[in-house]
Amino acid sequence: MFGKFKLSYLLYPLLILLSMASIEAFAHGVDDSTRNFLQNNTGVQVLPFIYIGAKHMVTGYDHLLFLVGVLFFLRSSRDVLLYVSMFTIGHSLTLMGGVLANIQVNAYLIDAIIGLSVVYKGFDNLGGFKHFFGKQPNPKKAVLIFGLFHGFGLATKIQEFELPSQGLATNLLSFNIGVEIGQFLALAFILLAINFWRQFESFNRFAKATNTALMCGGFMLVGMQLTGYFVS
Amino acid sequence: MESNKTSRSLTKATILSFLVAIITLVLFILPAEYNIDPTGIGEKLGLTVFNDEASTPSAQQYSDGEQDSVILTVPAGEGIEYKLDMKQFQKATYEWTTDGAELFVDLHGEPKGDTTGYFESYAIATVNEMKGSFTVPFDGSHGWYWKNTTNQDISIQLIFNGDYVIEGLK
Image 1 (cartoon, each protein chain N blue to C red):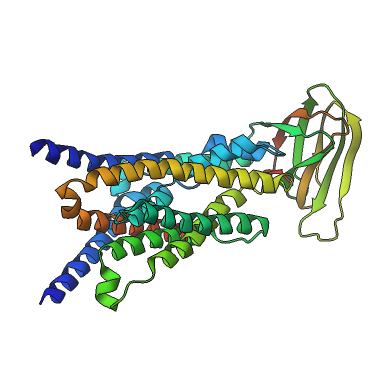
Image 2: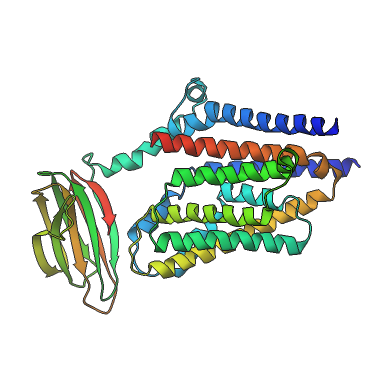
């Protein structure tokens, strides 16, 4: 009994630590060595762009928090696959479309909406929509729609560098593939942690606290990005 | 009765998460990210140091007496542009050298806001190294166009110094 208690508690600070680590590593967008590479290279670069895409996703705490929220109450692997596919379709559409059609959206506003998506999912997991409004917004549609915003967020990170149009489509596709690889890796860890935790009683006991914390993290993202929008 | 309890608990969770977010933002995140520190606690904790760091990269883009250098690759059969944003009568000195092969180069300037495609060339040559300086006649985007006519990529090391804001590759 004590062993169970202890193990399940370990995951909590671990998750928090993981998110802190990425906050430290990445303030906003892309780190310096990546920046250097992006600004000084021309032509088609398949593997480097895959790597940047994967790295961005694995260390992108806003995308990860949203995924944690989406996966929190999904038990069957069919549901996991379905929701993750919706999210993937959503963000790939706007990532590719946004950059190729050169749609310029303000990065701070998009990141604020991404923060809002985290708040939404936390509130939804708490049962807030069902309780206050009588019904829950269709969660599949919501994942798709917020996926679209996450894709615009990814697009703004690429657009920041005004990449030469030479080889843009291939580089972009590579970046997108990298994003999916990164998402897959991150999902593996998130699912492992959640499913492990689900075995213990504490999962249900802390479900409310976890989703409240999720909402809180979402509010922080919104506040941080909106402030960025107004001061920049 | 049960419904009221749920409402209270949901409202509590929402307000609590919002308040914790606001407090964390004001005390830690805003001081660290944007140097906005209404309580002064961020500075006491040393969190505002990030802003000294964060301001350096953009400051480096302006001339501070230090020279800038960049390594560029001109793909086989293609051309690239590397530009500096400069105001009228500002000056830049430069020196560049390739890995050996010759490149066609056109050092030129495009006036700010011009949409006609007009540009003025300051130097045109086909060489593998070049050195000089230029004082620009108008506000705008000034820099190099290199064209690689060979079938192998050529890399260039460019060192420059002066009054400008780097625009980089175009």
